[in-house]
Length: 219
Ligand SMILES: CCCCCCCCCC(=O)SCCNC(=O)CCNC(=O)[C@H](O)C(C)(C)COP(=O)(O)OP(=O)(O)OC[C@H]1O[C@@H](n2cnc3c(N)ncnc32)[C@H](O)[C@@H]1OP(=O)(O)O
Picture (cartoon, rainbow, N blue to C red):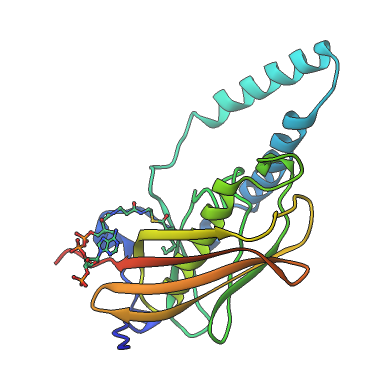
């Protein structure tokens, strides 16, 4: 197995791909608070049994808020730029549906680098339901995809998923602590092989492998 990786500190700059970049310290705390509150709002809407007049009032208030917020919108594809502990720079898609800090639909999955890859602990509320009381299989695949892609990026190889293979070993519960781990297992030319798992109480509920194909910045 050969590994042909870029040093993490030399990850491709999104500006070279024509993407807008937002520095982490430019992201207002008020936006983070709004995102967290709307995340809870989605769960509340999904499960509310409030009476019809309450529903009508809430609907009007949300409609008004949506119009106010839409007055000024960010471009699609905006990337969040944050400094890394090793002196390099990390980039994340701001509105990534799994981990984006400005996306109320995101878990959000906050992955930390480990000795051999990435890891996160998280809990999914009822918004992510598939079968009763369980996490939707598509979201399980999305979580693994994100962790596998991040493991590749953390190893200095930012890429797109070319192939993702998921095995659902046990039901993944909602509203319960979960752990996700992922790592690079090999690399050749632009292909990066990655594997990862989701666990509940130490038991694997789902595992995935993927081939990421490294991005090459336009010259
Ligand atoms: C900011 C950092 C954060 C990172 C986290 C991100 C996590 C989220 C990850 C995603 O959700 S990515 C979104 C879902 N994926 C896509 O939308 C990708 C769509 N597919 C493509 O854009 C292209 O097919 C792709 C870039 C993957 C490959 O096209 P290329 O033209 O650049 O590559 P090429 O066809 O030259 O193949 C390069 C190598 O990859 C191999 N390859 C390509 N597609 C493959 C495939 N499907 N399965 C296996 N191998 C594949 C191909 O055989 C070859 O291997 P060799 O070097 O051994 O010859």
